[in-house]
Length: 287
Image (cartoon, rainbow, N blue to C red; front, side, top):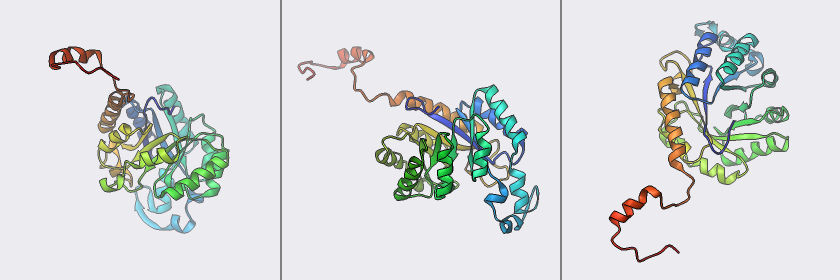
């Protein structure tokens, strides 16, 4: 669970499984091996999220000739999520998903997951936010495509509706995100604006350095898209980390947790022989 003492690392599988449940299960295994605390998926009721016109739009893909063929091909149903749930419990890794409509919220509530993730794309939908808030499930909420005024608005809607925001994520919704748009100091801005909330970082940048820096700045959770192969087809692959990078990210974040310390200035025992060797005089005592 998300806490202030240990960075909660989420591997967002999203739709990078490309509609293949066996690939999704392998991604869960690899995410666990890399040291991640959780994996995340995306859940949609296709006919609700997309208009009939959008679904009928021509789009050649591995599942057929229309955009609808692609969207339906990428979507997992109950039998798939039952397998995801079973494997995650066996491995001891959390799983949850971002629902994109109210029906998908209900679908996910049938599973004993720790959170519901509210994607950046959904934070301007008041009815949806209220529905998620009333679900009783703690929410993880991303802030991509939002300025501070909008963030304050959707936080207020969720909290006034009785929702619990377990973590609010600083986020930029470009794929991949340029360095000059990552703006990591937004983590501090959110901490100041919402001192009662835990603040995390949902990154889409290339490499791991910004995410490691986010942990150093106090992000209590890091979320990154992951993939087995960045050259695979799919819209999110290029903004994703391959599994060796995920393992390195987790390793570096765990080191950050140690080197960050608690901020208390000390005269360490290991420093004392160094002081005896290097200090010429000790004529000033601590106040």
